Length: 180
Ligand code: IMP
Ligand code: MG
Image (cartoon, rainbow, N blue to C red; front, side, top):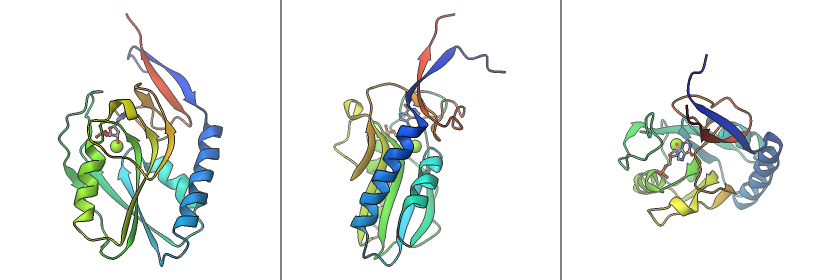
């Protein structure tokens, strides 16, 4: 039973997401057509649905790895402090690496992750983000591929949570808090 006082309004349908994922996968497959084996790095936990759909549309040899950074906890505000909670299992030196992120918000998470991965000297390092909130950016950073640009709203679904809930929604919804 959910006693929290908010409702979720659909923002991006499951069908729209699927269509966009297909487009992104086509562009990524074309760009990496000559790779030996692309290392697709999912940032846990928010990207787990996106990465699973994306890799199944890639027409490339891929390796899948995961990295977990500290999150906002149960708040909607960024702590700005990013820590690595779980590192990659594999080596990325000299490899083609694609980081898959759920949302680029202030940009602090991605900035930190990219600096850390860059120091391991991959051959190529790109980012594919499902969502982008450009109006919230505090660090000058952008993904090579973005699924959808969205306004400054708190969203859930398709892997993305609010206080560890709603990751299992098949669509992206906007959280609307209601007075009680
Ligand atoms: P950044 O470091 O501010 O760019 O934050 C990025 C991370 O914050 C994302 O990977 C999400 O995990 C989380 N985040 C940002 N916006 C939202 C949101 O609207 N809903 C849920 N999580 C969010
Ligand atoms: Mg995240």
